[in-house]
Length: 230
Image 1 (tube, one colour):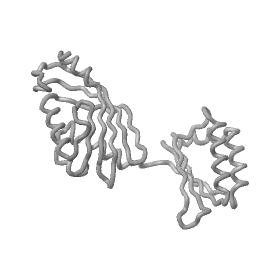
Image 2: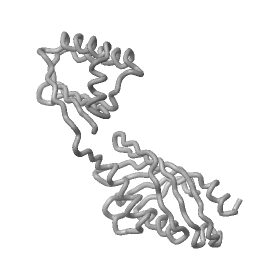
Image 3: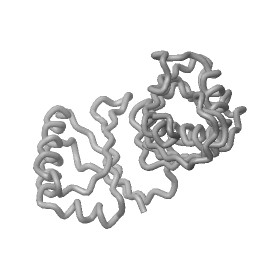
């Protein structure tokens, strides 16, 4: 179970504390079990900071706390703080990244299930599409998704399998594998009945709760070879 520790502290020496944390990261490289760290500054109190540190589990957090580098860093941190930092230990019972959920909806509901009505729900009206399989550098509008999904679903019975997914800032990148059976005409190629596979990545940029831009990269040449076009 994912474990999160919340560290609450006050300091007027944040620059020194940042340098301390940078040294700690360097010195503990290869030993730390931290997977994610976020630091926030209180807008109402300039000396008040909160840090959220994520670990794969409570056991990993304890292993990290017992590192000599961690103990040394904590002692130096206390010296830079106005008073003793407070700690809150949390077992994560629910973890939702809304942009990831929206992107998953694209692959599951729109692409694989063909629910085109969902396009209006999650794609911005001015959506910009970049696709390495197309001659145009970019295409604007929701219709490009509707047309692409219709074309692919008419040509193949297919599934997407997510291999990895990374969300950072407004962007979500999905590494996927695609498996499809060629049942209809595709780019001038008559149905072959062949079962094909393809790998690729898609990065979506989200804005105001909608998907605003997308970049598609895929092994199109490999797919065409499997269909006998090359």
